[in-house]
Length: 402
Image (cartoon, rainbow, N blue to C red; front, side, top):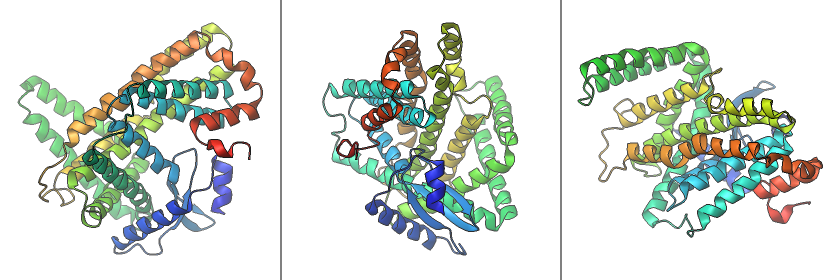
């Protein structure tokens, strides 16, 4: 039943046996950390273009679908974050790969061909100075640790969705309490910041509290569930990372926060694909210009406001992982990793080159007529999809046409 659901709902390919076995072991470890998981969901490892893990109920059976491609995507972005050079171009290359794969599922073959070509061009520019992924062994170890934490966290997050169904009222109360702790912490932080004037500090306190609560009010039922899953799942994933994997606490914290940042980035790109999709058939230059002019704002999700909620989740999770909320903050770390510094680097090296610079590149590609040049190639959809799948690596070159 789960296979039929995924075959209908997502573009998929088989997960590798090695990854199925690996995730089964991770899942068993997670269950071992939870005292009363009852009859836990069945784990199904998939490999889908959606890059999405989820808890769902089909035919009365609880499942956790864990997406191997999501883990690979986190790993790819971590490699970019720790690259020796060219991170901005590598980020834009990855974003165009993401867009090309999404455009294929939307039937936008000209756009898919355009973005797959751009992906290759960005990557080629990054490689001009040599191998950007040839990094020091110490940095590679940190990158590997962060990826492991992210994989654990995603599975733990989805398992937390199941746990929530077992005692919803109690867990809602728990997450509300955590939020109040976070709000109080932010108020103290602002109030004691010596760089702020009294007037600015008071304004920041008022606007900050109002802003966070307005985000929650937009969809409180669903948002409390996600915040609980972040909190409970993050705590369990950190426990495994610290005591089983021997990963330092600061690296655990970074892995957790980057998980949500990468997920938010995927949301930006999904919105970008939605906005650009009508260009596949629009030939009126005035309409095209109007659509492109609104791209900058549209990718910030002004209607559903999920981007703002992701940002709240990031802040709450970093608070819980870095301070005494989970009880791990007292652990002594000889050489703590600078979490805030690496998060700032994420903004500079990955997020900004995509949500700001790449938008300008796409506008230029459309206005210059480059998109229209793919019309003939896109006239044969089967051939176009085959080319894009090969260029993005969705179908390895050796299996093309088999």
